[in-house]
Image (tube, rainbow, N blue to C red; front, side):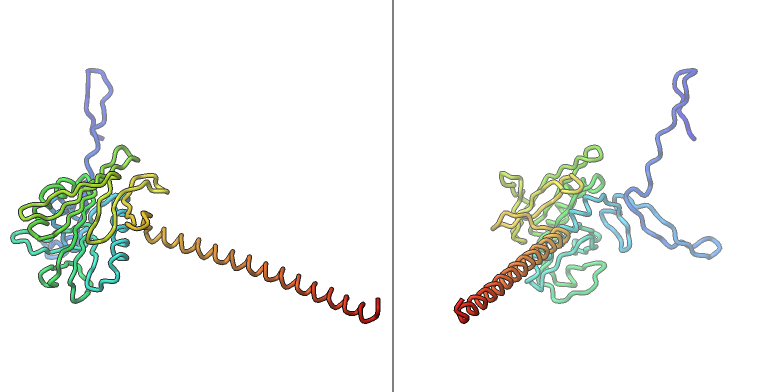
Length: 287
């Protein structure tokens, strides 16, 4: 183990660990050895690779980032389900057709006017004749500079009308903070849309408010969409499934109560008939 010495006679101190070369992610590359044999090597990604991913790249993300991304995709798809020409992509390589710019990998991208649906690995906007509606990025320490910097230029050049950034930062190991930044495309640049007094932004093309709440299980701050009419949080698949299961339990409990009440009524009616029969028999006997 490497050490660093301090004062004469002091105990040598260990060197800090080398940074993980695969902390951003990796890709597998086929290499040919001098003898002609081929091997597959795991190659670490660079920040430039993360900005312009290739198909098959594995980009490392933290768990809250993935929770937010999956949640937004589910909610957006459900909200836009009636429009069969609109589609929501998540972590899909997108070629926006920007001259001189390789494809990007937005966390979320909503496209309209689609004429077909295939199993895209790279979505080529020009080939699909699609119209971008909204792009969303959830920042991480590695991608933050790109999301807040060069991508503002890229997405503006790609004529993306709405650009959403959930600027997430983590303090220590438990506290997560999110600042919501929404931009609307202007003629020469994006114009920031100010949030309301609750810190929420109105996602016009989706028809929902976007804010944040504290996760019930993990305790960290996460993204949350809100219905404009009821003000209620729009649940993800887990929340909706749990709500449906609870509604089913309540229905079954109500049916059991109805069955119990029906049984009690049937017993009471039978007792009434029994007493009426006894009374009629006594009256017939002159008793």
